[in-house]
Amino acid sequence: MSGRPPPDAKRVLAERISAGGSSKPFAEVTADEVKARADELRAVTGWGPTAKVGSVARAWAELGRLMDEKQARTVADLEPDEVAQRAEKLWVVPPGGSLL
Image 1: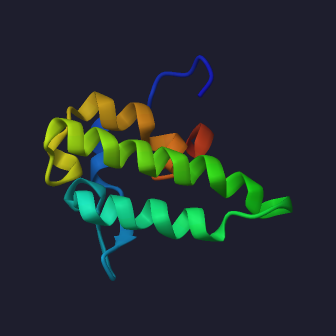
Image 2: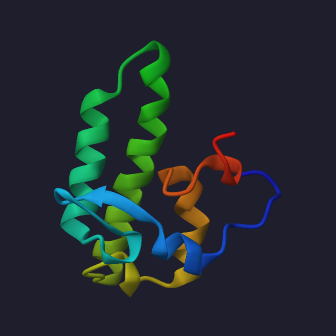
């Protein structure tokens, strides 16, 4: 991220993502689902256009380690600001806040 402030934590936690076979608020994503997302993204990382997926996979793996360290069962169990600071790297919200 650049010098921009992190996105609003409430917005980030409410953002719906696909995890565990369903769409759910990011706040409800479990530690196991976070680790599965990291593994899934790592598996599709390659060269060319897919090379950028590697940094997103690493961000999900880091989130999984943080959840383990904090003994967080779901993303909501983490400090909201910790989550918001990672949201763009995870692509929970697009970098810069918009895909446009």
